[in-house]
Length: 386
Image 1 (cartoon, rainbow, N blue to C red):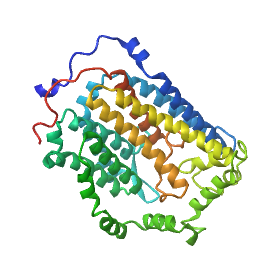
Image 2 (cartoon, helix red, strand yellow):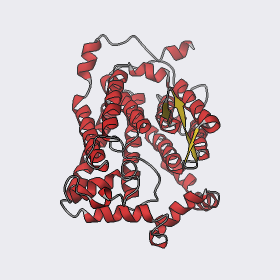
Image 3 (tube, rainbow, N blue to C red):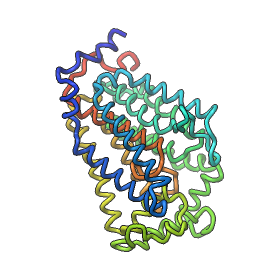
Image 4 (cartoon, rainbow, N blue to C red):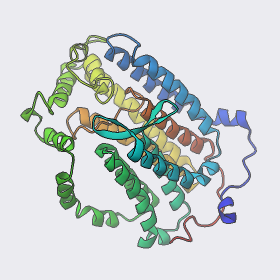
C-alpha cells in the first residue's frame, strides 16, 4: 500500500482557474459541434420537432459536458490510483446486469440506477482502458515480452468480454476485445503474439457461429445476402442503403428525407441516424460529418502523443480508439460493410447511457491533456505480478 501511494506525488502548483484555462477548449468545441449535428439529425428524425429525441439529446450532452469538465480537473494520478477499483466496480455492474438487469428485445443489458437506465458494458470499456494502462505503465520491454506478465491483463480483458457476451451483446463484446488488443499493442506487445492468437480465429469463428442466438445468426446471414429476406431480417440494411443512395451528392434538403419522414427506416434515431444525414445532406454532408469525426480522433491522438507519461499516453490512446470503434462500426454497419450490431454513432445517436460514458471518456482524455507534464513516481506497476 505504501508503494501504491507513491504513485502520486504532490499536486502541481497551478490552481483551479489555471486548470480550467488548460483544458483544450478547441477540442471541446469540436465535441459541441458534433453534438449539434446530432441535434439537427434527431430533430429531423422526429419529423421536425425537438421532442422526443433532440431536446433530451441537448440535456444529456449538457450534463455530460459539465461532467467532462469536472473530470478534466481531477489529477490524472488520482485517476491512475483508482484504475483497478473502477475496473472492479465495472465488473460488479456487469454481474448485476446479468443477475437483475432489465430485459428488452431478448437482451439483459441494463440496470436501473436512480430511475436512470445504465448499460454497464459501456462503462466497462472505459474501466478496461484505465486498468490496462495502469498495468502496463512503466513496464519495461523485457517485462512486456514475458508471456506470464501478459496473463493477468489478458484475463482482465476476457472477463468483461465474457459477461457482455452473456447479455447477449455481440457487437459490444467484439469492440471490447479489440479495445483490449489495441491496448496490448500500444503498450508494446510484439506483433507475432497477435499473429499466434489470430491463427485459430477462423475455427473459433465457426464454433462461435454455431452457438450464437438465432437473431445474431440472422444478422450475419443478412449481411452476407440481405436480399434473401428483404421484408424481414434484411429490411433495415436495405432501407439504409436506399436512404444513403437517394441523397445523391448534395442531399434532398433538411427535413426533406422521404425514407425517414415516411418511416421506412426503423431505428432512424439510434443505430441508423447516419442515414438521415446522408439522405438529407447527401454525399457532401456525410463526408463533412466524417471529417468532423476524423478531427476528433486526430486531436485525441495528438493529446496521447504530447503526454509525457506512459499512463496518460495509453489512457488517451484507449479512449480515442474506443471512440473510433464506435464510429467505424456504426458507419460500416449502415453502409452494409459489416453486420448490423446495434452500436450508436457517438454524440449523434439518441441514447443516454452511451452519451454519458463517451463524455466521461473525453473527461479523462482532457485530464490527460491538462496534466500531460506531471511526473509519476513509484515502482514498476505489476512488478510483483510478473
